[in-house]
Image 1 (cartoon, helix red, strand yellow):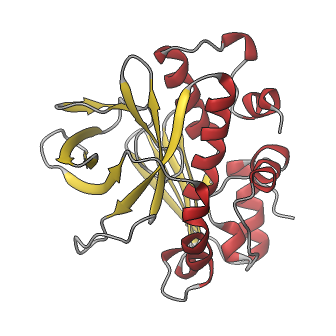
Image 2: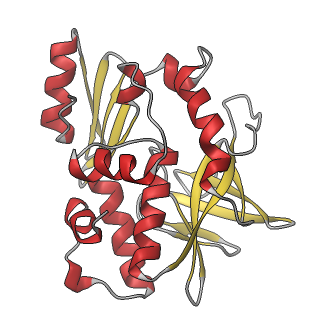
Length: 251
């Protein structure tokens, strides 16, 4: 795997790399803007694994996106290779009814500099910039976030559009985990008929004006406060939108 090719994929010049907070923020933001969150392999019923070279080939060589286990594990590999003190961690997502998912439901990234940061380039619509693990309300310039310590290395992440009304997103734990812990649940999310990713097709990334999202048979653009929506009527139209909106060619 080539770190320089990965950096070009996310639009960060090699000469800009420093092991500091500013570079960490730049890497995270550039990753989120350039690599979509998507489950197109699940849509096309193509089973994938988390072998690092396979994930690298998909995201970097083929200019695809992925979901949490792929994107966050690969981003962690890049950060470690650049010299950051980084590791993958387990998270549990709250569903719409307020229920908490199982262990290894989601993968996030923990980086320690002189500060402690939560990173996540594989959630979909969450934070653009890394969040410092500390008390108080933070913003990434678009939304507001709050991290609360629950004890025993567990934390709660909440999100708000106005800085007042917060909704729980997930809990996370800073204990060391290895990627093999995520293999079974990654397979389940690709094949279980009850899985959100089996039931739905999604591809999304932020833009400078808002966000563009393909969800099932619709393409939704949020642009400067406006919402534009159009129906996707065929697989041919789907592939065209993926190429034009996300730079993705599904082979």
